[in-house]
Image (cartoon, rainbow, N blue to C red; front, side):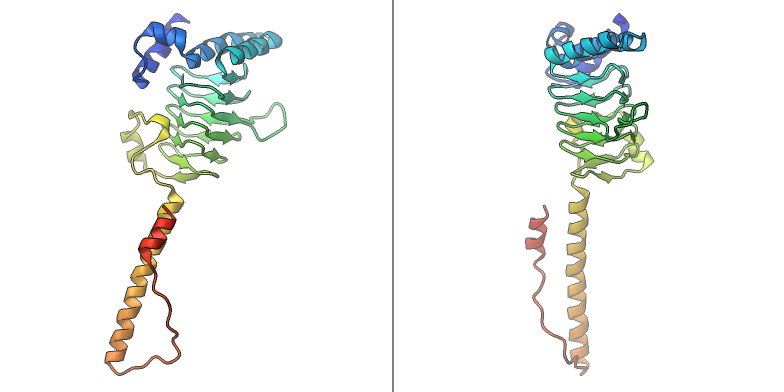
Length: 247
């Protein structure tokens, strides 16, 4: 138990520049306190003392503002930063070295008991503030869920999910392994733009290039004495204005 506690404290000091020493983390970090109390509650839950497990979980919510069902599985060195408003459901699984920020929900979308209703976070997953991960799917190793995302489907390892509903920014396996040991606070990554915004920018720029090509073709035809009758004039695309609309 104390070995796990030392690991938890060291992992928090590594990931939070505001953490000055072990005593401060032990006494002032509700995320650590919630995980310690969850271990007590989970022990009771799996040893047929379910009411006591739920009551310890209830006390932990009052003290820390973090609600973890005693049936949930929490790995080692999990860091719940700030933590207020975090809810982790009964069949949720949180892997080793995961980071969860305030306001996160690992919730279920099914009412059937005895089934896998809540998500599984593989090793090293980062879930940004306010994100909602809903359903019995898996978020792959070292994946990131952006702040305020609403995630309803699996995320591949090393990918980033952003938006509502969340869209996945896919990375190749080599990129995922190369960044596996890099910590990204709140799930923010370099060049982490909304994929829909990127797609719209690409379509706008492509349309502008096509317009320029059509103008050159028409000019060439006119110079050759070929007239295109019945082709109406149209307004030119303002790419700068359109790109600003989708930023």
